[in-house]
Image 1 (cartoon, rainbow, N blue to C red):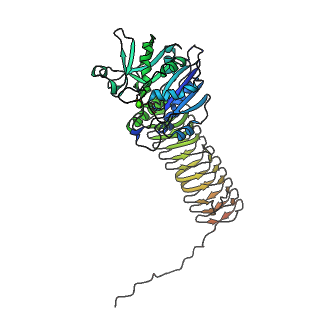
Image 2: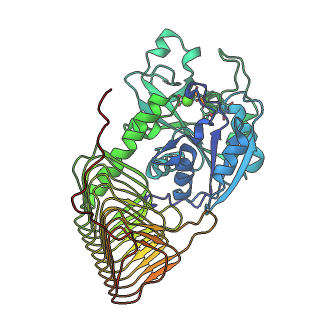
Image 3: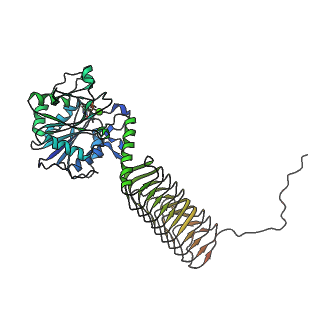
Length: 474
Ligand code: UD1
Ligand code: CA
């Protein structure tokens, strides 16, 4: 998130209006457009984050299509007042902002944002607000090689902003202009109210254009300023799945660069996906095609192999996560202790709490289980609802039968127990410290400390056994 270092000196309060009522027809989706995600967060959530880093006094979100769903998504914690204004029907961007006017006090500067433009940086908006100086209409603009579809910035011979002309209303000469309006403006609330009262819909789209207020300002003899940037990503909107994917890559690349600046070594910054919050200590290595979701913390020297998916987990210093490992702590979280070795092909589920130097090998699933220092389950096993002591060795193919069809029960495996291969531990059950369970046992009763427990059919050998023969053909 951007810093607030460039906050304008002006003490004028900032109120944000976010237009989010449009249908997003080109997404061809039942989900309202502003709820599609980039980096695991709704487009609108990114815009709200930006509003928060502006230290806005309030944000008014204009909703329409999918209003109820959009409003619910916004209700997460924000440290400014969040208000909604419904726009029914949607008659254009000017009409949208008109719906916000009853929510806007006269003493503020209003920053107009779009819910489908997610990657604008707070610093850019601080510059825009500074350009408005609290008393002018300021437009965020940029030069586009292909300006098709955008509103063009028309200037007078001496370079003053004269009007915004929408693409559909523009003459060929106006269409040749490459400077476009980004859809983002800063404007004093009183002036905004005055100009919006004069809107009409005499244009190609029969819509009330917010962009018409530029003409009104000029007519009123007021100076309109343009703050021009060069970073197109900051004003890029999402109108289609292709644009959504393009912005996702742009966003991920910026996350990758930030991580590398912090010292993280990425095998390939183009093959990383962070859909949440990834925090890394020094000397972390991440191989290709890893996905991080929710809150993930990687300790010093942690190494993540290729093709891992890791969500809601704390991986402590020096742990190695081998390729193709899936970790998802969901609400309970997962902890992997220092120096542990996990995978390849391991699965850690919610409530897996591994202490230091635990080894979890291929095709091992661990759920709601604590494993003390140095315990190992290296092959093809399941540990669910278990408490495992130090230095336990849990054999290949063994499982805790934790579910009786109605309730879950715990398995306690005390320190230094060895569980052989292919055992079934029927919970609730406790294996006493230092004991051994013979391979192939089905354990239904507690085992005493130090004992060898075997629970399987005894092996029998019958000497000189002759196998059945097929009867000769008649
Ligand atoms: C708008 C600008 C155009 C600019 C472009 C930048 C106008 C008239 N034109 O055009 O100059 O170059 O953005 O991307 O403002 N919305 C509502 N209610 C409505 C209509 C739209 O809430 O009635 C919302 C949309 O959901 C969207 C935003 O306003 O979030 C922009 O609307 P959109 O229709 O995409 O405007 P553009 O035609 O792209
Ligand atoms: Ca648009």
